[in-house]
Image (cartoon, rainbow, N blue to C red):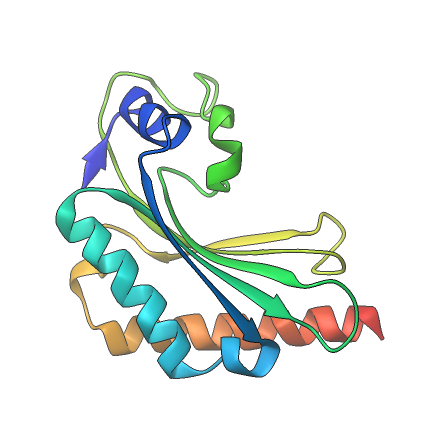
Length: 152
């Protein structure tokens, strides 16, 4: 799926994003079944040509919950900050591939309170769901553990 910056911004700011939200504990958020459901949801949105966001509200033993999200974007910024897709970052005219990103946001994730990394580019999206789940599981485990350590 490809979009211009204007098309992307119009969909995000116009509330044309299909979103699913679940509540999980930190342990449940790292499970393959949880991540597979989220990744499959996102791949389904790609197949339909619509933007999607899968939100896992992660209940932590200590401190406030974390927001773990799978999001679609043109570059690695959260969907909620889409207005940052200004001409300084991307040319407005061409269509860019829409990528799938993993976002972790909350107190003590790191100094900025935000971690975002690409899970799948336009080529990876047609690949193995099992591989995407494995990559996501490792990423979630690493960053949730770091948050727990930062809160200790």
